[in-house]
Length: 256
Length: 256
DNA sequence: CGAACCCTTGATTCAACTCAACCTCTGTGG
DNA sequence: CCACAGAGGTTGAGTTGAATCAAGGGTTCG
Image 1: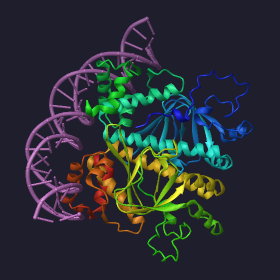
Image 2: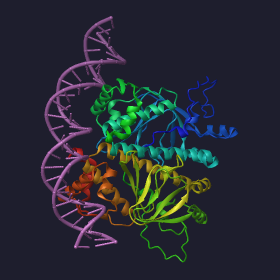
Image 3: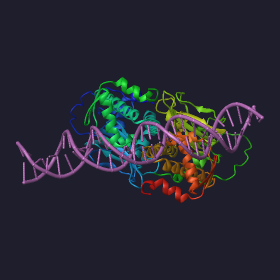
Image 4: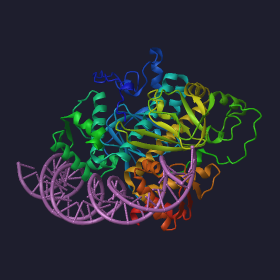
């Protein structure tokens, strides 16, 4: 399984944002642009990209950005904050389908039926760029580089979900959690954060839902990794002490 | 979870194909067009659609249409036959990520990295239309209705995978198999086949891989349904005797 | 006719679940 | 400043659904 997203996600995001003179909603001077928008945009066309963002929207921790069944109009690019997306059955069971962080796009599930198929909930105070999908489509007819980018984003989501299917269908609890941690830390690293330390934004229950296991099993597995000296855990804080051990668990558990 | 695909897939496909005077590769006179291509195409523009299909390709049972790592150039629309797609880990475990039938599109996973992320293997002799993706992109810049259609196809795949995640993460063996059967029969029905009878194209092991269970469990669950009079099974032949019971299992197992 | 593959069924094992108790934070209000 | 409530996290004991191991039957095809 491929955890690498670096091919399309440049990593020089740690550059400090200039204090903007006005609160202009614009991609062209957004320091996340290289994560969520295509590179190789013609400089003189770059400002056209700004049209795609209608406005920004702030979402408080615990609030819903959109819910299952809501009419789909826009995609959302995360500027700050952290989200989970989840689907649920009629009898109320929830499945977390993903965790999203700055620069990632949400809402693609809504295109097929003009209604959202999942809910997006902020796990911390967040801000998103609202991109009306009709505008995205219009603009991407004009700019092949944007068109290609939209296709890649959707394809990446399909590939990601393939990986989750592998996780859920074939792997044991330890492998799932190892894969989860490696994936999280890798994405955070691409955003300028530490390669070895992270603060979880989600509860054990949410991790469990994503990984197809119960919160107790998540907790036990964390403890096991900790006992083995692979990680250090204190509540939401996690430090990866032995990334190689994690990688080994992730892709060779059976042979151990 | 939504098993319904009817919103975008007209069902009048049972119409007999006229014997074509020449073996012209063309969407405009393909009897599957309404399944795999957009409706609402302007009659005079319809023939432009034909450009998208470069050629056809026959694949024998057991053969690979494309494999993980292969360079991505084209999408494939199934004309006849039945496929499975699967990903695998470094240590050789396989996960079937889907089963595809006539009118469905394969290859979307390759867009993000220009390389296929999964393998597509024919489960019976098959024929596919090869659609170079560059041409699809060119043409969809010209025709918004095609552009929208491509987006919907990708979004539908994302939504489908969300459903599989729910299946794998939250459901018990019986629910998974019930959901699987209902989904299969529904898609077959949309193609003019029976609503209650079907012949499985895949082995118990492949079903198990898709549903995250072992082949013995698949077999046992089939037997259980059979004992309960819900279905009739004889090897690959399955007849659904009590669809309501299946639906009940699928979305309320916990409350039983 | 035999080999290979697929499927079914039974017996046993085990990883993860359930249930339950307790601990640790964090924030609030007296 | 402390008490306390409530949410989240940990850990233990017992249970269980599905996996594993094993044997045998059916179908297909050279």
